[in-house]
Length: 283
Image (tube, rainbow, N blue to C red; front, side, top):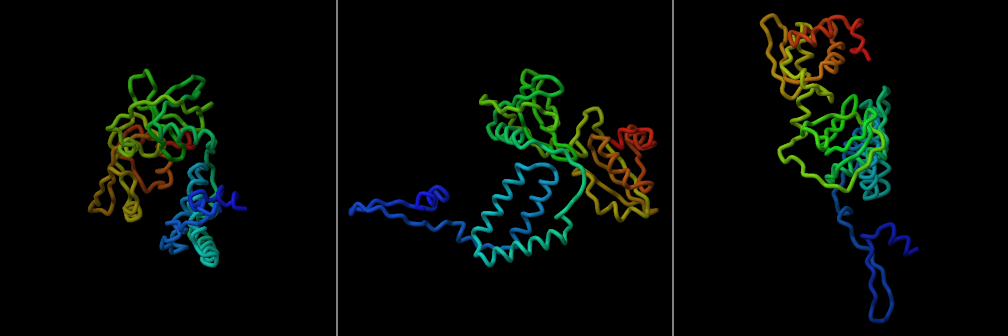
């Protein structure tokens, strides 16, 4: 019984051998037990994140947040924990998060663990991609409709490349360290794209005009971190930002129908001109 307690809570049990040759065990007060938990409020903040990660197929991160949630529940008195769980379930239903149908690409948990281990090292990462063996310096993960690994191939020209996680095979984190570029910032790199896909040849200014009827609704959207906007005298709204990824832009802009006009770039405007003919937009 005591051995099971020590194995389960190794940091919470102190063992003392007294001068009378008797062994005594004492349960230490854990700092987490003195946290001023408000119960449902903390859990309400965690649950949507767990559900969203599971919906994206990111089971590794979902499991980590679930473990944190369970630790918070364990620190609450039983009656408060039961009430918190009930309140959280109701809040999830109210926010429409409990069941969100839709397709997503599932990520193998073992592969996700190997990538996470390499990123924390940082260690070189090996895998097979498009039929070729790769060895890369991993820099981060871009999460979107598809998940991409941002990395530099060893022996390459130091160009950052993107690899779709669902297409990476036989992923292995090595024990070979590498020196990360200290100037690299994942947020700045991600801002070069509209979504998670980047194409250097597409990078440039995007100008969108929204109709008078859609202007107020469009003004509530943040299309990109670099965006600026202005209202015209006739009620239309102009939105400008700098990014690449025309295909993901087209996926989103199709939902606005005739309410949006692409002023530039020409490539994006042509992609949306005939979505039935440009099948890539719909796939």
